[in-house]
Amino acid sequence: MLNIGVLVSGGGTNLQSIIDGTKFGNIKGNVNVVISNKENAYALQRAKHNDIDAIYETNEDKIIEILKKYKVDLVVLAGYLKIISPKFVSEFKDKIINIHPSLIPSFCGGGYYGEKVHQAVIDYGVKFTGATVHFVDEVADNGPIIMQKTVEVKQDDDAKTLSKRVLEVEHKILNESIRLFCENKLSIQGRRVFINE
Image (cartoon, rainbow, N blue to C red; front, side, top):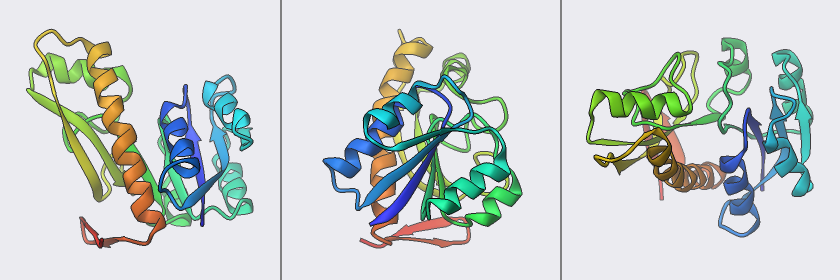
């Protein structure tokens, strides 16, 4: 069983999905610490309700220390609205994954987060969007892609309705990516991630 540390900034619906996946699903890992850079993030309450250590911390060096103290094998950025530094990336090389609510490389990078992504999708007029799980490197939303899933953009969508449907997809592919990581079934070759089922 691998130790999973989750970094969050908001409500933590992806966090809850991961917790459920470890408790009732097929993820062979254990969420043993949740860290938020927002003191009032509901995700911290979700962690406490599930008997997981929940920590509010904004200092990146201290976050790295905490993750090492908990012997974390995989760091999951689940709605963590802060860009992590190259130092953080090097401390956990190829052991950090992120979920992004679009089909990278579209609508990603600096400034694209939360409902801003979905509004940009609608404003641009694309017919399909989706979600992407990727390994994290030194550039925002740039690392090798593990998994993507598409969502149709409907004519009557607004940012909220689209966000809801994308979130359902996020939960599925994030959990599946974590499962594959925990079972050592992912390998990175250049920019490509191979799934060895």
